[in-house]
Image 1 (cartoon, rainbow, N blue to C red):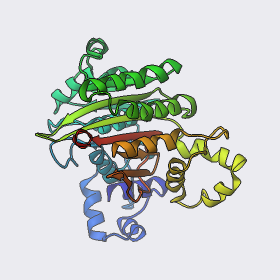
Image 2 (cartoon, one colour; image 1 turned 180 degrees about the vertical axis):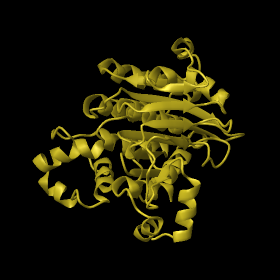
Image 3 (cartoon, rainbow, N blue to C red; image 1 turned 135 degrees about the vertical axis):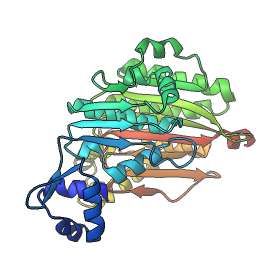
Length: 369
């Protein structure tokens, strides 16, 4: 309810509670109760009309939607869907809460890092509040999170020294820290770092497959993403008890997104393909990504691209899942016993610019293969 009301009042300030309820198809009593309980976010004038209270601080609590013992990217998405993304609302002060004492998975960390950095680029006053989760702040410091965080973002209760992260670089082969994708050298070094870590843990059998996945994605970020801040790549191995183990690899940037860079080339070099994926169809963008991954040849240069297709091919050999988050939608492709399951996507997601890719596969399956 909160996100829907906030987006409506952003476009149409000065509405009465009954008008808000009518426009959104909600119960009038529930809307009025919510508005009266949320006067830090909304303000009411003498005519009983509501608008956004832009002098207040917009709070996003990523620990409030946690299901289980870890804060995952699904928890991040649920909170943004509930409260709204601060990137789609005009509040100038934003506080991101990470409390509850729970650890964060790499996929959630990458999204929160991107969100904070994008807000800072918009000159918002952003604070990341770990007062209720000091242990996670300590872990993030070792994972080079602070080094990748915009200098203007306030970290509470204190901002760790960046040298702390540098001290631990490459010390834990179960974790490849958030490595910066900022030049052609990164295209060589990052895939090698991740491959080396994987080989140490599990041997050489599948390491080259993971290397290809990471190399193609890192190259796309460096050459095509138009990211406003350097992208990041990282890997972590997680143990979940006896015979339960998985690897998460993330590649994240704050650029234009896959479809925004691919569509101009479609119109120029593949007009027939472009006609199959009209921009005014909401589901066209996720379908276009699925097409580019399943069929070799499409690229933003017009010279025939193999990167997305090669990524999917190697994912098949790893029995992996691939989740691709774009600015307002996501796509998920997953394999089971070497067979591609039906691709799924989610539309109308809260704004988060860029491309955020999560590769996940069970190492226990590979060991048994």
